[in-house]
Amino acid sequence: MTSRNAVSAEKGRNQILNDECQQPLVAALAGQFVLYSCLPSWILRIPTARAMSNSDPRVAAVQMTTGPNVSANLQEAERLVRKAADAGAALVVLPENFAFMGRRIQDVLPLRERDGDGRLQSFLSGAAARYGVWIVGGTIPLAAEDPGRVRAASLVFNGRGERVARYDKIHLFDVDVPNTDEQHMESSIVEPGADIIVLNSPCGRLGVAVCYDLRFPEMFRHMLDSGMELLAVPAAFTAITGKAHWETLVRARAIENLAFVIGAAQGGYHINGRETHGDSMIVDPWGSILTQIPQGTGCICHPLERDFQVSVRRSFPAIEHRRLKCR
Image: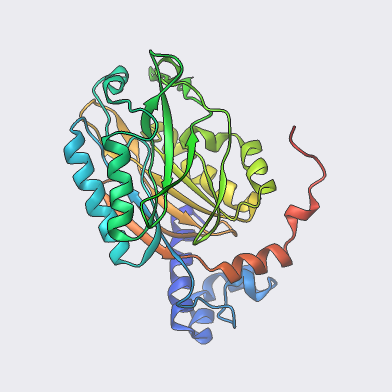
């Protein structure tokens, strides 16, 4: 089965789940029922007592195609946060660099803010309070110890507009993309962070990572040891690396940690000539894509079936079967 067919099948199963009708499920999957017939019903996602309820928290991923005009970017980000709030989201994740993508990497330097003070931080706090939602604020440039660099900081605000966490991107994108002339040296302008974060949220124990971090699974094992149940990943994968690896990495982090993953990406053609992959998605602990958006600007929202996660972790206890620990 191709990835797109798998996604289509999953969307069909989710629609059937919403209708709470088991007979159509058998019909909808008739062409592949032999494949699945030996699996337990919670893997098939057949409607049971644990079907989605109105109490399941809703989360949203925002996708943007950010440019160098900060005011225009903030206006678009607010529009999409409002759209997510209107859809009932309790938690909204913005993409990496949501407020600014300049023509050159060093153009971000004049925008850096002191921790706790600045236009971008005020915007995030204000939007969270206005719409009563938790916001994972993509990344914004905060002052670093090195005056020639910034910290790529992802700030988390609660529904009262209070900042409750800060994560500074740890893994920096210093690569030559194979078989292309595409080169990136993020460390020339970004100073790496050192600490992971996992915190309580209305949707469960929330971890935050940024873009290139996805390639380092040991990071998420540390988060799991701190109780992570869902993961927010603001990102800006390139068109080439995104096509090759984005979906695979997002789903792998969900599967191996039996966690929900919210991937909020940049997606489209930018004024600086760069193309980003997009394909923002929300993935469940079984690795199923619940909803996604291709390139362009938009917002996706979906409830998190917390009972399903509990059921999967209990029935398929891979987390408890770990034998090796990351140092």
